[in-house]
Amino acid sequence: MGEESIDSGAMLQGQAEIWQYMFNFADSMALKAAVELRIADIIHSHGSPITLSKIASGIASSSPDTTCLARIMRLLVRKKIFTANSQSNGGEPLYGLTPSSKWLLHDTDLSLAPMLLIENHPWAVAPWHCLSSCVKEGGIAFKKANGHEVWEFAALNPEFNQMFNEGMACTSKIALRAIISGYEDGFGCVKSVVDVGGGTGAAMAEIVKAYPHIKGINFDLPHVVKTAPEYHGISHVGGDMFEVIPKADAVFMKVRFESNNPRPPTTRKHATPSTSASFSCVWWEVPSHTYSSGTPPTDFVCPIINDN
Ligand SMILES: C[S@@+](CC[C@H](N)C(=O)[O-])C[C@H]1O[C@@H](n2cnc3c(N)ncnc32)[C@H](O)[C@@H]1O
Image (tube, rainbow, N blue to C red):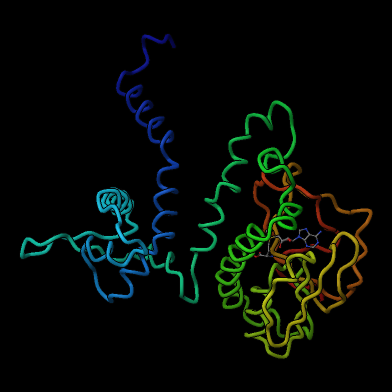
């Protein structure tokens, strides 16, 4: 097909799509601003929709720029993160929450706010700027952008470590609620479970809350468990999963792995798990150009089901 025969309407549509993709980052950045400004929390604390000036008065600033705020809100209303409704008396529109913005609340049981903050932080966004360089030269985008691989960076940078762990913990809590409710008596037959790469223990805390007979072990790198809160029924153990993991009836994993290799190898030389009974785990494999640091000992990894 010659170029001249390409439909001009399709070309215009194509152009519109490229413009849209070009500015897609604006959505994430507006969301990040909303979380940083605690806009959902401000609306939530009023118990009903409020005006822009009311939102502005709740922001931690002596002179918030309401024009800038209005632009951010306009975008987020268009994206259905917030609602905006005119008042019958002609007063300022009232902004309300939607099922999406409820996930942006800070002080709720289940929230995505910590994850949103770390995933949109310059430390996490910078590696995405290295994609073409990864293609040309190979290498790990996170290291190119931040000078170290992700776990090493977390060990060296307490702020990143905390933000990352909080992000992981909030998503773990959400995932575990769903897993536990759908996997009805999945954990009932084991007395002890070790979460390998369990972060600060949020997943294990959910398991032990639902199955208080379980002795939970949360296993992660030393710099992570050092910051973990105490949970009743859980012991935190620091170490390297490629060397040895604590003994337990079942292993649980919900970890991101390197995915240069879409399927992990079946053995790994240094893996010597001391666990030998049944193994339960969630294999969560996602494209992760930002992470490397090896592939875990997958000879004991299986779908979310017990072996025995
Ligand atoms: C993506 S996070 C997942 C955390 C948690 N499982 C969750 O889903 O919320 C991966 C975790 O693996 C840990 N990790 C990475 N390499 C490890 C290793 N060699 N030994 C133990 N833990 C490791 C990291 O510190 C991090 O907490």
